[in-house]
Image (cartoon, rainbow, N blue to C red; front, side, top):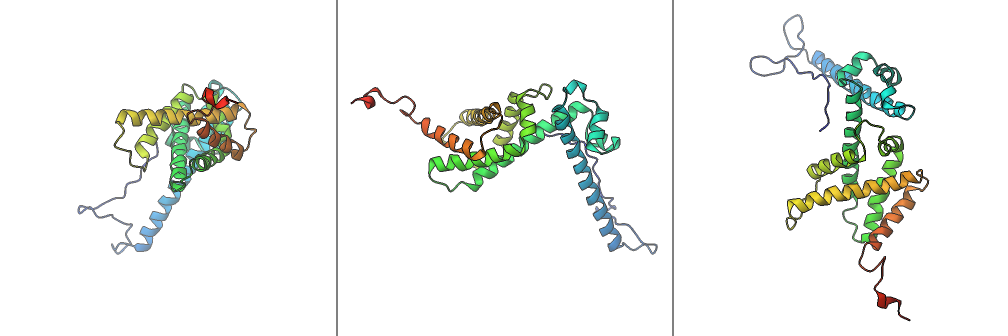
Length: 244
């Protein structure tokens, strides 16, 4: 799903397929040279990943200041404090940065939600389960407010809330560690992931509409209340319950 434009470093190998290390003047393989080479490549890979992340953060910052159409690649490079070569090592253009920014966050969101479900899988009380899942989710979103403010306002070109939800639902369907109940059809499971993803994002959107003024704890409590309200006869009690 997420396109990566990183240059890959493949070790040189001999005719037998064994990795060829740097050699000394005597022709023997140098263990220290091989270790140094591996460390150098690892450091370069870490630095490259940091550069890619910095460029994505730069886009989020700039989108909070101006329209996407007014942002240039030069501004992204300058704001990220990384080089032009670093930019083109990872991205084709600024649209590619936008696409990878949204796709990466969708994947991180799914990973977070799966982690919450794993962590609280043994909670048996229904409302407490919903509260704990919602609390972890809202705390995560609180740290990513700038991105979600942009998402809800369609600041990423052609990649709004619907696009994000489709990415997340698809990723969740493929990545979930839980074995689906075989009593349900594949179509029912697909509908479940699609609708539940949109439902959670709408609750986050509600928070955004209130300028994130409530705390994650307050929103989690409201979510737990909603799970109770969704039960039959809660919002609209049967008529005979008003007797007396």
